[in-house]
Image 1 (cartoon, rainbow, N blue to C red):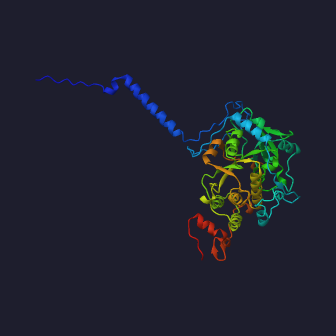
Image 2 (tube, rainbow, N blue to C red):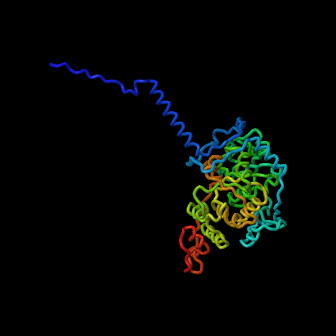
Image 3 (cartoon, rainbow, N blue to C red):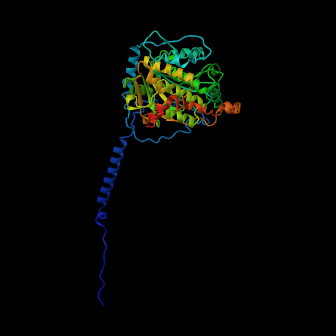
Length: 460
């Protein structure tokens, strides 16, 4: 019997050297980190705060308030046009110098005592103010009825003479959140004002955050201004339109403003935002593009479909009015305007003739129709003279400089007096004959829709 052959096994060469294993591990780790860093360069990298941001908490919220609940997640991880912020102290000094050298042609406003705050002017009257060639012309711009706030609040608003950050919360619809990343000099140069009503104040008092017996209200950086909404509009959203579009009148001595819906939390210093998005771009106003829509009619259809405004017939009348007077869908011929539909939750303005006139004309349209401010946006922008210098920045920029939260699920007004749903609160469908004019479909908006959908114009 022959001897069996001894079979021996040996470890693969790659495993025989511990040094080689560690070298390969280091190589793959380095490659992974390099790849991650390269891909990350496409993200919106922001210098979200100056070198010495205020570290202490601006306000200590009670645990019952839940100011950071229900944040809306963002899905965009890249940015086609990231924003670079300048040195914080250079920005502070530049805005201070801007304040000293500030000069602009004043816009003159219509005065009077009317039954309504805005005047509710006819279409032809509103359109007559779009071409502003005569500086002596008095433009209708609200305040035809007294804005119901206290004298102390009015004086404080007039004393805000540089940058103001403004928001509004009615019917306890949102939560008050403190901004993040403020620089050490920001509160010396920026005012924060939140307009509220009795319902919101009662909700804050229930959480122990204010006392309604006190003469004034302040939560962190925000000074709360109580508005007696009974003297204004029945619709709370329309009352919010007043500080949103008439901020230059409420704060007549401010050079810049940032409007932010109450659902937002600012996470970048407002001075850096104003400098990067407005001053450096040399524009009157900066606003985000809408994440989905480009054409005004797309937004109008979504407004009706998702019941953002229940009177669909009124929406169609509004669109027919704009089409009749020259509203066109967006096209490259409208450049440098890159879209007809903004996300108006965040608006940055330089308080000069262009933005002030635009804001007045916008308010007049909203007063005439409804508070859905994305609907008249392109019509006003495209027809006003002088032209509006506008920076419509990418949606990803908006998502990086703010955090968006959902509205309150349970509002205090529902616990006080439960209201029955009246027939007037239900959706009002459009009249069937509204789509037809002289026997042809779609009335004044036929050409608009045909162009937007890429169809051919019909002469039938």
